[in-house]
Structures are given as C-alpha cells and as structure tokens.
Amino acid sequence: MTNPADSPYVRACRRLSVPHTPVWFMRQAGRSLPEYRALRGTGSILDAIADPAIAAEVTMQPVRRYGVDAAILFSDIVVPVHAIGFGIDVVPGRGPVVAEPFRDAADLSRLRDLSPETDLPYVLETVDRVVAELGGTPLIGFAGAPFTVASYLIEGGPSREFTKVKALMHSQPDLWVALMERLTAGSIAFLRAQVEHGASALQLFDSWAGFLSPSEYECFALPATTRIMEETADLGVPRTLFGVGTGELLSLMAQSGAEVVGVDWRVPIDEARRRIGPGLAVQGNLDPALTFASHEVLVDATRRVLESAGTAPGHIFNLGHGVLPTTNPDALQVVVDLVHGEGRAGVLQ
Ligand code: CP3
Image (cartoon, rainbow, N blue to C red; front, top):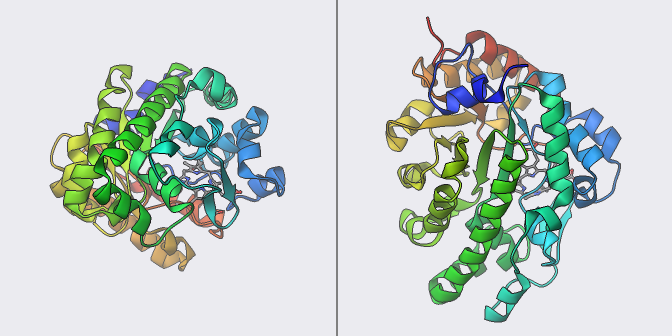
C-alpha cells in the first residue's frame, strides 16, 4: 500500500514532481451523485454526518466513481458549532440556519470550548473508517474559517450582503475579536484531531471572504486564519486556504501560512500565481457552471485551465467552487480523465 504522503495530491501541494496533475472537486460528495441520493433519503444532513457508516460511505462514493486524487471528509463547516449546542440546522436547498443568531457579548457563552474526541466522536470515527478504506489515497480534513462560520452565526443563515456581520465587526471590534478567538480555538482543535486520526491534508474554507475589502480582510479575517495555520503547522500536512471571489485578496491569503491557495474561476491560474507569489501551490479553477455546457466547451475550458497552470509544479485541479447539485457526474468524469491525461504541472517530461 502506498503512503498517502507520497500521493500526487500531497506532492502537488508541496510543489514536488507528480506522475499526473491531481484533481478532486469541492462538494464531490453530495446531491449530484445518484448513489448519494439513494443512500441519504430525506433526513437532515447533520443526521447523515452523525452516522459514521453513512458518512464514510458518502465520502468514498466520488473516489470510487471518478478516481479523483483525494477524498474530502463528508461533513459541514457548521458541524463543530452545532456539536457545542449553538442551535444550528442545515436546511436543504438553503444552507445553515441559526435559530437565535449571535448578537452580543452574552452570546459568547454559547460558544464553549470544543473537545473533538467527546463532542465529535462520530466525525473522528468517520475519519478512521475512511482512512482505513482509502489506502494510498489522501483524505482531506477541513474546517470553516472563523469569518465564514461567524457570518452564519451572526446573519442567522446564508446572506447576500453580510450587513449584520460587517456592522458588528466595524462597530464592536472587541466583541468581534472575542468571537474570532472562540471559533479559532475550535477550528484548531478540530483540524488537529482530524490529522491525528489520519487525514493527510487540511483545507480551510473561507468561502465568503471575497465579500470583504482587502483592508477588512486583513484586519478582521486574516489574523484568525493565520493563527490556525500557525497552530497546525507542526502536524506536517499541507494546508489549503480557499475562498470565493478572492481575486483582490490572493496576496494577503498567501501570507496566512497556507501551503496552497484555492482560487475561483474569476482569476486565471497564471495570474493567480503572480498574485500569490512563488513558494505556494495553487488549486482550481474550472467554472462549475461549465459542467452544464456542451462537451466541446467543457473540454476547451478544462484545457484552458491546464494551459494556464503550465508545467510548473504545484497545481491541483479543482472547480472554482463546489459541484452544483444538478451537475451531471459524467461531465466531471470527462474532466478527471482529461486532467489525468493532459495535465503537465510538475510532470517530469
Ligand atoms: O464533498 C464535499 O465537499 C464534502 C462535504 C462538504 C459539505 N459541506 C457537505 C454538504 C463540505 C466540504 C462542506 C463545506 C461547506 N458547507 C462550505 C464551504 C464550501 C463552500 O461550498 O463554499 C459552506 C459554505 C457550507 C455551508 C453549507 N452547507 C451550504 C451553503 C450548504 C448548501 C445548501 C443546499 O442545500 O444547497 C450546505 C449543505 C450541505 N453541505 C450539503 C452537502 C452535501 C447539501 C445538503 C444535503 O445533501 O442535504
């Protein structure tokens, strides 16, 4: 059995040579897969996540089907705050919804310390099961970055304008820092536990960071992310930092300490590399909407990403954001096969 640390995915994160450009997809497990829909039924996703047999099977489904280079743990960014009883649910078609949103200092007491082994034993059992089944394929553990998780807690659900979270961070900076500190500590503990149970890499999802200006990002979001990177560095696994609409933030994200920066489809890989600077790997960035286009368009768009990445080491192919629930899995198979066949980033010629 090969060691996941020697897999194309982990090697590409470290900007080492690879036999082929690695590829995986954010949200590769989920509603786009008929085998997922058959297994899940209609209950809350939080119930599925709490059942290690189901969660492990769902994590494995895309690995078996597509032959992707990494598995991502089937969980959600709000699972840790749910586990400590903040009162959060995930509504199908909508996303995380909070019954009583975070408003003031009194709400800090609703965010007690997270101890992963006792609060999230089912997630860690899922990690154990998946790692045992994966063999040499790496498992990516993950957490939500504090800003993005806080945006759900404060807005009470998915938001388009982020008015409440921005009002709070600007008007009550001390409260904001206290909230960030709680979420940061929980993320660190949870990420560490996933690696201790065998995850070979980590990804921090700061999905909504792109709604911040560079100075807001630097002041209100980056410090928490940087601390998470500092406090997980000794684990020795590559860490990816991803957000949507972060073209103007890429150079700041590159300062976080992450080994890999994930980019959405708005910035081509070569330009993203210029903004990120040397020394980091880059992940992305096919527009997920193009999986709905004709075969020719999809092939051309995939090749454009590969061309933009070129032959320099340190490219992990992915979509610019998650797989959409109505995506045809066959389109993703086309992408995987093309990337494996034609991707040249870090491939010895
Ligand atoms: O395959 C994978 O990527 C692993 C599983 C995963 C889920 N959520 C499962 C899920 C991961 C990595 C996440 C992370 C997550 N959750 C993020 C960061 C990634 C991103 O998309 O930016 C965010 C912002 C969330 C919050 C969240 N949870 C949203 C916006 C939604 C979608 C709501 C919907 O129904 O369209 C969820 C629910 C969710 N998380 C689903 C899945 C498979 C769909 C719900 C279901 O199947 O019942």
